[in-house]
Image (cartoon, rainbow, N blue to C red; front, side, top):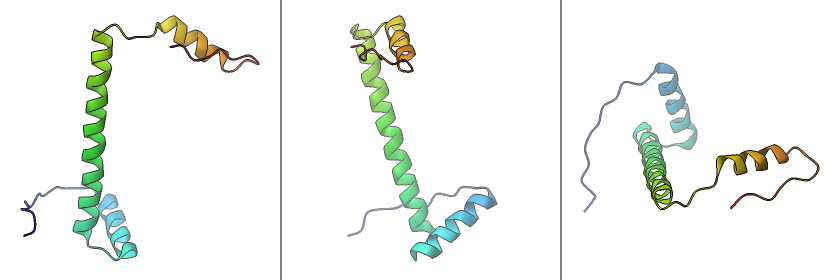
Length: 88
């Protein structure tokens, strides 16, 4: 049995719609398939970004941080002949 689906409607700029149509034609896929693939990828990316943000905030709460001045000194050294090792 196929998964349940729901129709969503969105207004998108004509230039983007034309790109989707060209891509669908080139890939010999439907416009709906192209949009589903793009939306799946975007949602996955946003979920991963949210997870990483929560992990980073937990690190900050636990005191696992690197001093800004240490990072700045490292970054400044990258354009020199003797770059410093990345701070830990």
